Image (tube, rainbow over the protein chains, first blue to last red):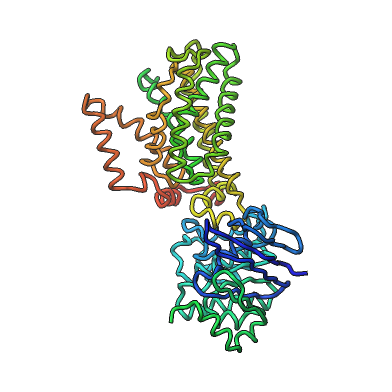
Length: 237
Length: 286
């Protein structure tokens, strides 16, 4: 059974239908990429899964259980952790406090997970007393991912983790994703950087104006000309 | 011995500290209320009616007055916390006015004539002790899991909910605790002056805690404490200026806002003071 699945999910903002009857599934240990240009509905889709916007129709299933319409904090406690676009850090809190907040849903501190997160990102250990907003963009993204990981999520959803980062840091972030994949973390990755996302993902869905226009194994999509066309379809020349 | 004048100033200071902290709680979760005067009125009238008309012992009356304010806070909070920012401010203002007009027309507690007959309870030691209790509650909350959840909501509600914080419930708790603390301030006030009337709890009363925390600083509970102290004591120190004193009070507030928009006390100052104060108990004595 898929650990996470969306069935015919639709989301509207007022009269604008941002997501139109989208279905996707994620198996345990898989990295699934959701690709598409600006306004394709990727972020909205993640937010609908995370419960921070209410879907208009369709279902969200976590391990077969219907969690459609659950408020975001319940979805988070059930094991789906979203790292929102723009990272959603608590800018005025220290690195350490941000990491502690990552375990809020668990209700108790898990020292082992905190240590593991700082082993993964040694820079966070060095800077743990520093205020989060004073970190560099790449470090902030590391912190956002670390904060999600200390809650030991069933499914980690990353919304444009490479957005606004220098090319070297983009590669570093994708290395992190690749490392998590090797450890068996289930990941849903929303990206505009299709090439890098397809290189790390097992499977991908390509969205265009709120619909899935293509889906398949990442390697196949990356090789196919159709992807280039579909992906470039909405992008500026 | 303290002179009666000085004691009176200190009692007002204590009540103002409690009132300022009543706004600190909702503010710590990003909720600005301009209706604290309304909660204060509920605490004042409920406790006064219980001691004066029902003959209750004051501790029970204070407890119930505080609880009544908390209960009304929760009732107001349920719908009000779905709105944010400026709309929440307007709703709480409207609430404060409703409470004032209610007591203006409510005959059992004297309506426009006001209400009297409550015993003198609010001594300086009692005010000091209760102010300390509320301040310790604020301090303990700030460094707790709940306090971190409040701070997360204040910064970014989306970030807070995706890490599993029940935003609605946390806001409701912070709002109700603030209402309860304002109710306590009202009970103390009523049993100090022994005469209350609805006009005392109007909009100006709601603005008081707001100016305390803005001048003192919104970032930590120390801001509420320092702001209440500064703005209670300053007009007393300025008495030698006679009729010019309130003008200078206003100028002082303006200067603080221009020179230190974050308020007198910010995180940086609190950290700097913490580093100066040695902590032999925690670090282990020499």
